[in-house]
Length: 88
Image (cartoon, rainbow, N blue to C red; front, side, top):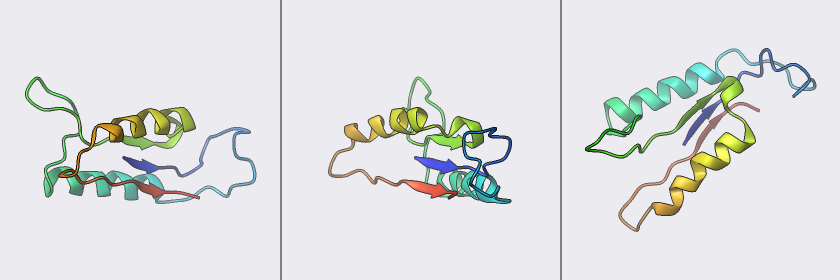
């Protein structure tokens, strides 16, 4: 699960948080590394299940993060589990 939130254009959701410049891009680049170098699957296909969940900006809600974390319950002792957060 990779999450990045710059806190821009969030309305009143987080008025006390200063917007960030690179958190979303950092998360996007980290996810790209996981796909390109380590073989994580960013989308499900008929042959492979999704193994990377990328949530950026307004998509990075508490509910969406919790939904992505539910997939970690299927991990077994041979799997790697990673949670990356870029933001406040």
